[in-house]
Length: 171
Image 1 (spheres, one colour):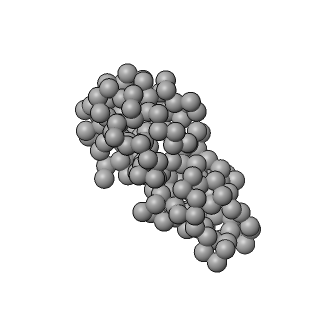
Image 2 (cartoon, one colour):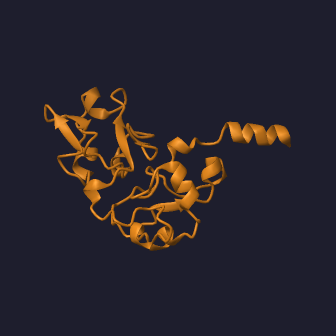
């Protein structure tokens, strides 16, 4: 049993990989403040926010977003309902959200293989700012404008996605 638990802990998803709802304070503070009341889950009209499973270790039960399943559509309804300040209630503008930053894998991204695809570019809610097209073909993430919502990751037609949002909640 001890060996199973040690193996489970060793293979747990790192807290650094967790994508939090918009307005989340830095991770250590978030874990201290979040009381797992599920108000953010209940208010989310898209069911983007889910409780973290056991595989997330110390984040177990806290609200996360799994972008490839259901990204955040930036409705901004969750920060105002957070009773503890784990989600910043003053954050109302979607352009100011910083959940993470998308990264493009050029080895698997279709345009870099000569196949026309504009899925991430066309679906980005921060249109023509967070994802731009170089030479009218190659997508490029502009870090300072990317909100980390994960919509680009969800719409990518590549198996497993050629664009992945990396959490920056520790920043």
